Amino acid sequence: MKFLFDLLPVLLFFAAYKFAGASPEASHALATQLLGQGIVASQAPILIATGVAIVATVGQVLWLMARGRKVDTMLWVSLAIIVVFGGATLFFHDATFIKWKPTVLYWLFALTLTVSVLFLKRNLIRALMQEQVELPEPVWSRLNASWIAFFTVMGVLNLYVAYSYSEEAWVNFKLYGGMGLMFLFVLAQGFLLSRHIEEKNS
Image (tube, rainbow, N blue to C red; front, side, top):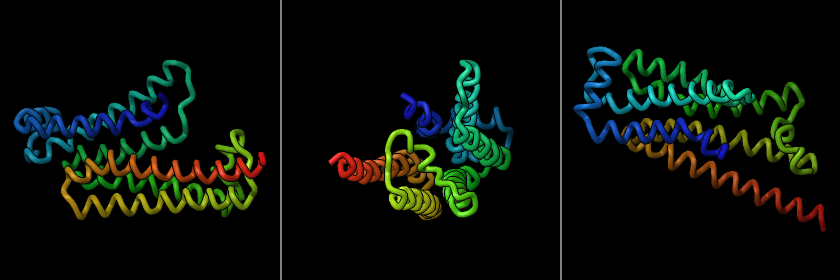
């Protein structure tokens, strides 16, 4: 359930883009009404989808706060980035900003993991997972390095798709490609961890 909750803004962004693209005249009229004149009809789907993603992320934070639950740091960071880059997309009517948003988020995660281990001598992956699994120190280090590499590559890949293919292809990649690669990476990490757990128990 939490996975779907975290994924909600991406799902709504994707759905809003597809619905807006299927009704170009209505979406253009809506975007013009909300954001003012000067919007080209082809810009309407990405602008509407961006607005929906901002509202969805703000809604997540407000819903958690209203229920007295803790808002994860990752969600606060995601909120800040979507408000800044999504807001710039809406203000300038330019999809470039929202296309950079996933890359900035990925690279921020990679930078945080790197700075934490190099300067603070703290492995954040171990801090998050050590209550669930015990691993040798070298394995924790490799695990942390693999997440840094994954986030770095994902940031580059997002920009490659954004600038090499159509806007619709990028939107499709944002959902299917991004989530699919994340799933495969987590699956590979799970396989690695299960090997060490089996060795510990044998």
